[in-house]
Length: 52
Length: 388
Image (tube, rainbow over all chains, first blue to last red):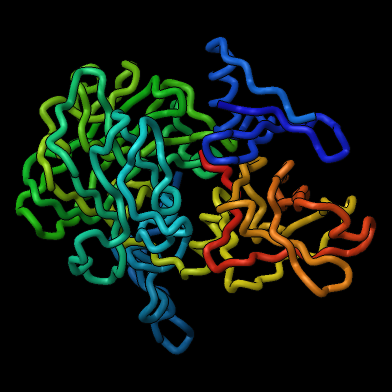
């Protein structure tokens, strides 16, 4: 499961939290964790919205 | 092409300047080639299993790939545990010249079903294998060598694969005596077809099978275009046997048709090679100041945490032991308060540049003032992973 991230100033960041271990995954095509996230999304899943 | 065949070149005083051997050039008593001289010939990183930044010593308890000792992946098909990996498992004496090995221990008698795969692997970055020219008519032959020790004997299996696993070369190696270190070498002709990345993606994947189902075995000793072939059919299935052990060290992959001596690299150099893919900043005390940041508000700090010692392969995933293991000092310096919320630890290839830690309550920090950030426990860590 993943959760989108906003900065403390409210901007949406180009990264996502992996909730299983609180890792922050950058939206970088060469990052294998991001590749796994894209596969998860392609399977029809949706990340949890960022905290407001 | 022309050749100059000499055995020795002498000085003007008829003293030998250098001599040649079958695979060496010798300068006095020093050799290049069939020696432990560091020539960056070994494309495997952490082949002597010395670096273990994660302190990994555990069973692999979930489906998928888990990084264990630095650069070494363990792949587990089951959601339950089939095997454990630890540095120097079983505390046997390593082979001469080594102090560490990667140890696999089977923790169950696992049935290997047709679609199952279990393995230990290293993904070699394409930038470090580009000169092999695989996928072209100029593909170079490579030789893999390693020391292995197992409670089982027989013909074991492994493979080389490309990034898409659409090209595979299953290979066999034989362990003749149980519980005895044995050095293996396997020579593999370069693949003249297929797609082999020369980027910062996976160039070559070296895999040692621990158990492979019938869907993923093939004919040994030849390149195949069948997908995901991890070992020759009929190879030993280590994980069939509860308590079976398989230890490995001195892994080397080099250009050429002969296995030369393992390339010894100094610890700091090997660590730096590993840190291109993974870096962990461990806490050294219960008051380990990491950085001076800025209070973004009365409850949050923001700023650069630290640079990585080595530029990483790509933008890393970052994580930490526990957000409560980090504290911020307010500008008066009189007290530190543990963070309760992480609103983002982000990084680029050079460092972790933005941590937004929140503390509970209000008016702890002075907005705009400096706020030192520290580990408040010796068990704290922050890491960054750009593994392949």
